[in-house]
Length: 121
Length: 110
Picture 1 (cartoon, rainbow over the protein chains, first blue to last red):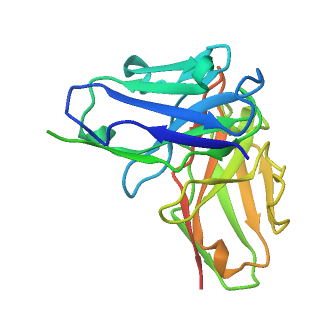
Picture 2 (cartoon, rainbow over the protein chains, first blue to last red; picture 1 turned 135 degrees about the horizontal axis):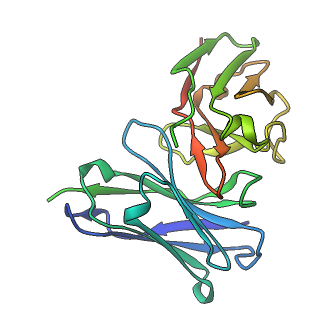
């Protein structure tokens, strides 16, 4: 059974860079058909897609966050990572990593449990 | 890229059917048959219920069905059960390998 697990600091200071890693286990990370994504959810609010990356490293980002987001993949460790720069309190959220079956079609079929990241001094 | 529009809340009694709408534009919902739906219980990660407008993943009850007309997609839950009470989110492909979520709908089972 495929499992995804987010890891990283739970507290980040304003203006600094938020860094999270998603470790994939129990299944195929190397399939070229899958895309790996980051989605966040501010407390009490809805889901927001941040961006996705393919196994080969092709990325796509939410236009509203694109200037601050970098997603990368480390195939040797079955991991992909998120960096969000110049964070403010508005970036406080539960951050999820998830697998999408395709770049266009399919849905996010496997999710991590989510990790709460607070932005505060 | 604006969030898709969903009703804030819907409700129904056990056994009844409810439909949740998801309205976008010709650049997302209306332009592609790549709409998915997610169920989220409090404190839990979202769960995929429908993908590519009408398809159900293995293990999802056939009480859940999806459809689309023009720029609006819909999720219908028939034979409502207490365990269906949750938040529901739609998501659509929006071109250039991007996706956009709806604002979410809270389903209350009366």
